[in-house]
Length: 141
Image (tube, rainbow, N blue to C red; front, top):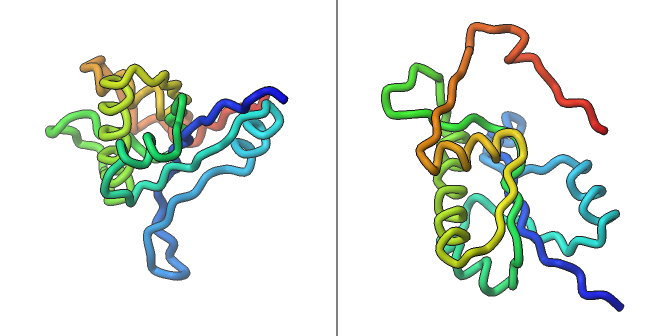
């Protein structure tokens, strides 16, 4: 039997109003897609104290920075970044730093790719006044 690749998957951070608490969440589409492709999924919580220990202990071979939340563009940014965005940005900064250092492959999807671009000092542009941008969704192909 072929060994499954262990892939770490980051999750978005939400504030659950019903329970008044911060939670991690991931779309069922991610889990279904990765299982269908024989991937051993390791969800990476945003509340860990030590991401490098988690990645080593779980023997994660690659990481996917998933979609959701906003990326902090810069300190002068006029975007309204809330606590959930900040938590995720900090956790993914630590994850990506470790992966770069250890040469662990990383794939960014939507927000994840924006974060990778920002991490490596790339330029991001946001048109927060565009209703089309705020309400856009991605087709499942």
